[in-house]
Image 1 (cartoon, rainbow, N blue to C red):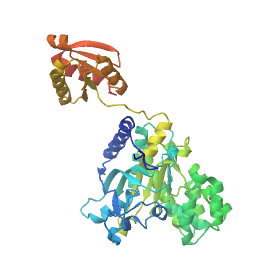
Image 2 (image 1 turned 120 degrees about the vertical axis):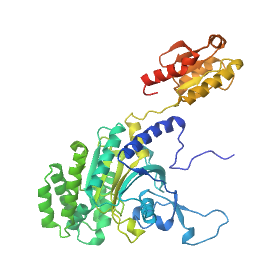
Image 3 (image 1 turned 180 degrees about the horizontal axis):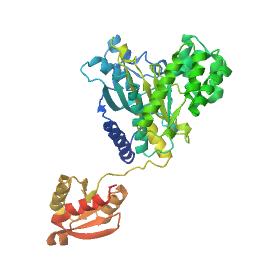
Image 4 (image 1 turned 90 degrees about the vertical axis):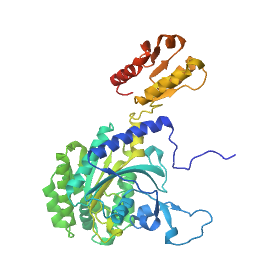
Amino acid sequence: MINPRTFRGTRDFLPNELLARHRILETIEEAYRRYGFQPLETPAIEYLEILTGKSEENDKLIYEIKRARGEEEESAEAAIALRYDLTVPLARVIAQYAELPRPFKRYQIQPVWRADRPQPRQGRFREFVQCDADIVGTDSLLADAEIIALTYEVLRDLGFENFRIRLSSRKLLRGIVSIIDSRDSMFMPICRIIDKLDKIGDDGVKRELVNLGIGWDKTVWAFDYVRTGFDSCRFNDIRVYLEANDQSGMGVIGLSEIEKVRLHALNLGVPETCLACDPTLARGLDYYTGPIFETVLPDHPHIGSLSGGGRYDGLVSTFSKERVPATGTTLGLDRIQTALTQLGKFKPMSSTTQVLVARFDAEGMSECLQMAAELRKAGLRTEVWYDDDKLKKQFAYADKQGIPLVVIAGPDERAKGTVALKNLRKQEQKEVAREGLVEMIKAWITSEPDV
């Protein structure tokens, strides 16, 4: 006998959890459509050469796939893997389909896979769902600001209250890092270490920087000076500091990006209290080129980021000679569900059925089936009881599944042309005319919007 089990880092979603999960997805998708984004889906499997070389960290996490049994082909054509994000496949799509409009605003909600260490408390799994929204084909920083505003509205609509959207720029980061160490080769190693700040803390970052030969005191001084300036919105002071110390000139450009994106986001309705400029935000992926952003819960730092993204103007050029600017974000469905659960805002649902047509006797089954067909035709989610069981068992099932209404047509009701309609939520029962059943149920559901 085979032991039934799931692969570590993956999960089964039973109906009571999946139904509530679908409500999260509906909220996210509605916001994406509200902003004019169009849906896209891509295959779970990509050629390995498509996925590799975009992020040194993610290259280590790719699940390569062995070819089907019996195949012995060993070539680039045979090298395939599961996608680790939805951004790289999007870049491939942009290069592959020249007929797509520009700007191209797409959203994509699909699973991805990473050979990472599962951390369920943080909502980190090996298979998880990403909810991406990207704008491709414009250099305008309005696009970056719109992504931030979209993120704010999604999380607000999902019921989050105290959250922060952190904003920075890879160009600002490059300028600060050049003050610490002017060698270009040190930029990405230092970025990857700074990106771990929330996970390993100051002491851990200090150890890794020292091992890299970087002075901790100089690093803290540079980042703290800029962060203090952001906290008090002293952008001119930061600009003067960068002009005097950053020989690369990138820091001032990055600062200008942050100022513009921040102003646009505020004009789009993002509260100032929700937006925090933070120079220590690095984002681990190598392909970011401009503004970067992520969302965190200050009261629940162990959860990590609920969303993350930024501008990646060079990614499409890995598949095409054309330069195509792009910006976007991803919301982690599993991380969001974990956070809502810990905040007590994720409510499992047993069923979405609105009406159970009970079985009273074998003679009345034709009438039961006809009623069920009529209710379904009217758009009401309806179940029929199959077996010859007592009404007590049928009521217990409806109560356990959260089905609010039960319809009963016994011999007496059938003789009078009526049905008994029991409302389990209000614990009341009334006899209604058979021909008025649909209208009665619709009227009650209209008065109960959560049904």
